[in-house]
Image (cartoon, rainbow, N blue to C red; front, top):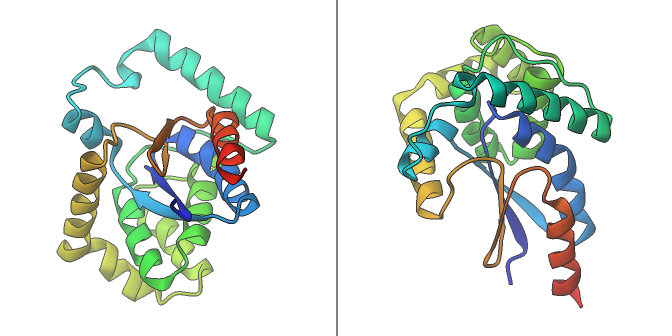
Amino acid sequence: MSDSIDFYFDLMSPFSYLANIKLPDLASKYDLAVTYHPMDIPQAKMAAGNYGPSNREVPAKIKVMLADIKRWAKHYDVPFVFPKNLQVELWNVGVLFAIEKGEEGAYVNAAYKKIWAEGCDPSDLTELQQIAESMGWDVAEFTRFVQSNEAQTAFRKACVNAHQKGVFGAPIMMLDDEIWWGNDRFEFIEEYLQQRKS
């Protein structure tokens, strides 16, 4: 049995933001680590054969989806502010830098707070650099990393690996042979963890 829950997420995903509120504590409760896998939702959808329109192109769907996100944020007692845009690729690449530092959990928390709790402009590089500064990292080194061809290639490979594992959207959590999709699956995850423990 695995001793880590694989967490596939995209920093552009508000539902991944919500999942990240609960997942670390749940994993800790059952003596599990969280392995963070940044990915790109549009790419994952295309790779899985989902060529439908984005949520933003379906007004009725986006209206209900936004209402749901606000309900979940209230339920979790966390702030929710829609960001200025969803241009988060460099932020996702930054997860790989954080993994090298062994600080991915703290980075993901800080990034989600800035994007979805504060509603920043992710396309503003200084917003991302503030995360690196708050982590105590060399900001210039971090900036070079996220803008490098090598790091962006590594992120694309991570996206391919996610598709090969069966990832088609986010958030997705995997443990053993089980897969859960969505921030509303924690009751089912805990049921599985209780059965697994007994």
